[in-house]
Length: 375
Image 1 (cartoon, one colour):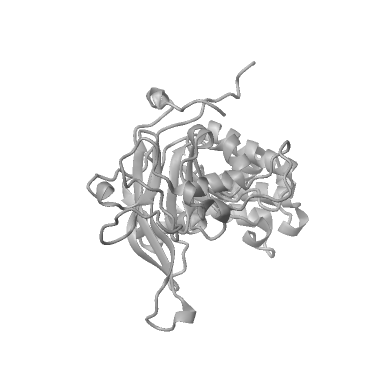
Image 2 (image 1 turned 120 degrees about the vertical axis):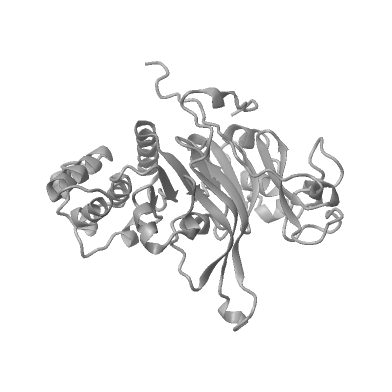
């Protein structure tokens, strides 16, 4: 994975000039029971910006608790309120702010325009209803079709995801499927109504590597045939390397790096991103112990200025080593700074950066489709 990515393919007829969804300065917090009434809230997401284009796969990566799933669930208004609260921001989908829609309006969006695959299919499927009942419910809710037509759509959806004998399996219950087949059922349910955007939250969690590869290949194929955008939430950088077009790296509810997949793997710029890469075991690199992310981000040498930038452009970290913070201005110490045409990095809001206009991340990039090479 070498060489700088260019954005020349934005002129390709398969690309689009406008995002299908934009997350704009999203902040989400939760009640803190230990702090008591009126105490400080837990800030799960703190000013996230990202965008997804049609037929694009945006990978959102980071460790557990960084705000990946909260961001995705916010776009479906699936955050329970209370204890959750949308503090600020907008999520624009085809010209509408999803956070401003009523529950009745959201019922038409969920499963129709936007669908979601959750981490654990066994807990997402209702064990007392058949697979057919659960898929048909989604189809009849979002499509004006008869019961017979709904069954036909459900059978085709199950056949598309590789479930054998789909008509017969409609009568089965979730416990009668393996983990990989349950995940295929979740995908069939999500895609039965032809959504424009799929939110895939750790879609291969708890599956063995062979089934993981099958599920991810299935998603790629369905994306190609249905012109669907995908937000792929994961902490697996191998999955990101094989599937993503653009990568959004999150930590502590913030976006700390945003770039095309090839550029990010070629030259990670934020210390946290470098920490993620260096904590991965490598086959030909024998070590007694792995380097941890903390060892990277607590090293003052990692917090030098970004190369080629003015004094005061220093990567952000909530608790950096002594002596690395530049002179800060009042307010939030964090800013997502565009360092070149294809790259954004979370930085401390220095006096230098505060005088510059902050452009939200938006990359209309898709990796070359190599599926037909050699055919």
